Amino acid sequence: MDIIALEQAHTAGTYPKRDLALVRGQGAHVWDADGHRYIDCVGGHGVSILGHCHPQVTDAICQQAARMVTCPGIFYNDQRAALLARLAQITGLERAFLCNSGTEAVEGALKFARLSTGRTGIVATMRGFHGRTMGALSATWEKKYREPFMPLVPGFVHVPYDNLERMERAISDETAAVLVEVVQGEGGVRPGSGEYLRGVRELCDERGALLIVDEVQTGFGRTGRWFAFQHHDLRPDLLCLAKGIAGGVPMGAVMIGPHVQGIHSGVHGSTFGGNPLACAAALASIDVIEAQDLPAQAAEKGAYLLEHLSAMDATVIREVRGLGLMIGIELRTRVQPYLQALIEEGVLALPAGPTVLRLLPPLTIEYADLDLVLAALDRVLAVDPFSNGGDEDE
Image (cartoon, rainbow, N blue to C red; front, side, top):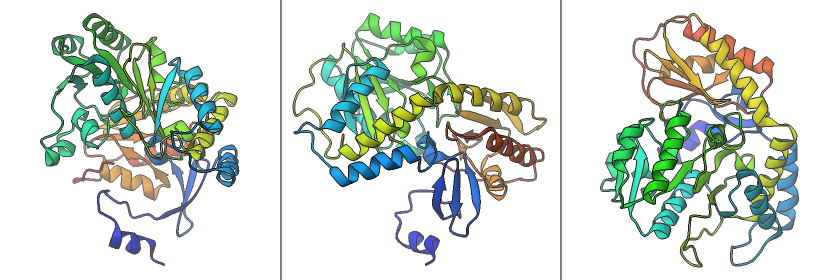
């Protein structure tokens, strides 16, 4: 079977494909159909916090699949109840709405904010990325995602990131919520300052708006803490989670703080949200993150990568930035040719815009693999043989 030809014949064509058919994964490694092994610094766009096929998560999925896969929200369920309690424990937010993706988490948070405040305005940030469904897309900044689908949901405005003065001017008595990332992911791996983020919290308090923190990419240890908002003692009213929550199984969550009011039966729902299979996977994933102290590992391994990347003598590198194992290497030219060159070196990486090379390896990655990634980057970035490069995005 020609996997690439078969998929290409029938896929909708919404993804910029790389010429690889991946068929197996284990830990930080994946294999293509020809048996070639790669170090995976894509990780399902940050989903594979624990790497591929973690045995504890795999075992939980198999056991739960033999007991019960689906259970709608109109009934109580043991796995769902346990997960809700665990999420409350680790986030400090007592309630949750469970869904299936980051985009769905953002959509839910936007609805809850409007419902709770009775207001309609949403302030988001330039370079922010929050998803591709119509509400989340309205909050996303990048024009190439937005413009084909105009008009979008009204009431959204965008202000420069990490600019408290512009945020202050944007929040009005019609603002239901401010939606912000602690580290902008798709926008170039740009960490916000604590002063800015705490300032946004204060402005929301002063003006009766809610603070929605999008941690779809940064949650569950990725940045060196359980959640990136903990780096800055930030207190979200609504917290959007997904990606690493369930060890690769599709899941999302909106954590809900005490200032969010008015949520009642019928205002929102999700057929598959909170299904027992995903809940079992999430419980197992959280157990592994806690037992292995993966946030601390991410902090240490991320510092190791940043130190070595910053020391690279490569004129093509403009800047290296990141937090934990969320690393961005901004280049002076297009990133796409370098991503292709890394494939030839056995490393899979991501873009974050047209000129930023992004690394999202599993938090469980070994230092030996990190050294191989660094060596590959050193070889690829040492020279600039490319004159024309294309763009790639999710």
